[in-house]
Image 1 (cartoon, rainbow, N blue to C red):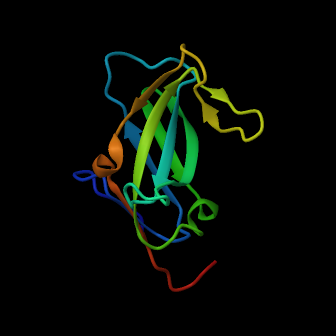
Image 2: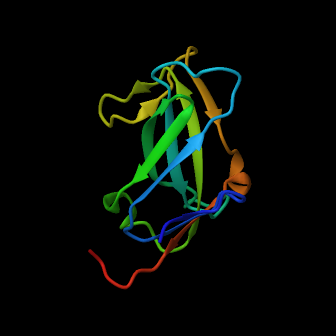
Length: 133
């Protein structure tokens, strides 16, 4: 069962489950229309060649809130382990024409990390399942 510990930020999710949650952004004013939050899950092994993103997804920021939805397709191949997650806010993002991923290629783009560095990122724990669907 999906669990988000609001005190630590730890997310626990069985492999292949769906999860939906919101992150409220506290800042001095409204973020511009078109701002996105890029949610990422990465391998927790700091400094290794495997310290890469396992999943990234972009979501619109509406009223300074990011609604994150992870589907069965997103989580069913995540390795069963303790990973890390983060969220980066990008104003005026562009999209890579080939991959459709959010990019910030020019000086007009602002990028704000909710967490910084692998140590500060909260855990994203993928647990085992009894039946694959």
